[in-house]
Length: 265
Image (tube, rainbow, N blue to C red; front, side, top):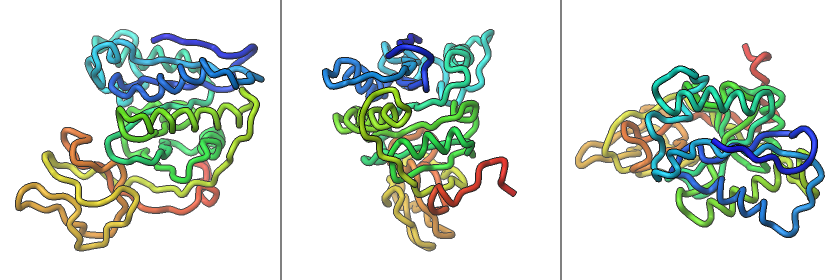
């Protein structure tokens, strides 16, 4: 892990890139931003390049998935479990923007695991129109910080780097770190209700597009997965996960209509 602070004074937020070593878009966007001639810095931000060892190997992780290892343990044998502990210590109580890429969806979207006022503020300031409540998945970084992860686009694509830089610039402007206009959005929230297990399936649908009840949405030879009830696919793909197709979700409507966690029934 390495860190870099852009600007003077106390950072307004932390930007984490490279949690997964095979998702370079965040680090590339960070490097592009730091080299830009048009940047007028008016505040400070902490950049964290997380899993350097996995990036050097070109793999998602060394021992275990870092984004399933939080809160971590400094005495663990697994590299990522130790790293998770150290990373939370580094970002401390700063709001966090965590940049990723995927094999499931071209358009970027945000994910969160708890809805606090700080997380809500970050979600709005990504400028994105979709947000996924994925609190069903344990061990994620955003369970322990105010902040969001953003899937910036297809893994390895130039578009993912462009999207990561666009989101990064918008967030930095919104938090007063750089001078510029910032879009503030009210994203539609999709709440994950469960994982669809299975290996070797071809995904037949489209993420964030409703699958009606009775419709096949994945196929493996003559075996089809059919929707018992209508749902929205999220992070579903043919080859994104080893043991599942992705996630089922329910469309919950605008973020502005969702209560913070301490107001939920």
